[in-house]
Image 1 (cartoon, rainbow, N blue to C red):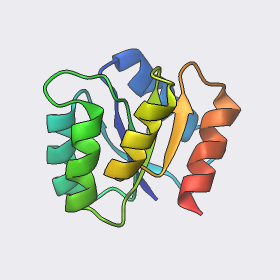
Image 2: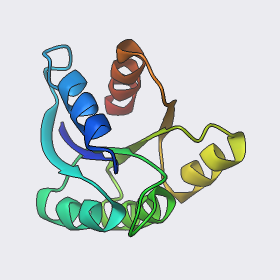
Image 3: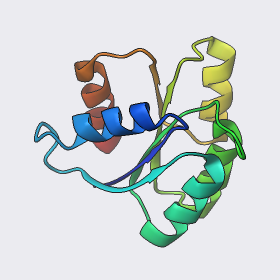
Image 4: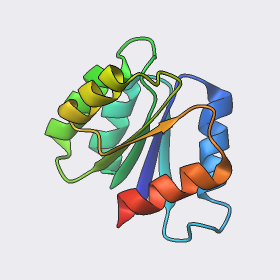
Length: 121
């Protein structure tokens, strides 16, 4: 399972990468780290990820716009929103655009791993 991690925070990108590659999810291969939606779309075109973690609040192209673009570009890819925005309207908009799940920041290590496992099944 090829994973693309999208978040404008380098700390958060690295945190998700560490949790995804520590051996607890052996089927995950991280194929890219993107700091904004434009970079995410470019990397997705080159690397064809199966799964994407997506922040919503980012510069250059926000997560909602990026989800829509990625859903058109890679309709089989599974998108997990990982965001501090927790209201139901935001989550529903992300789902309507093509997201498959939502994890609220801050999250526990197990919450993220479980969400990724569910996304991959």
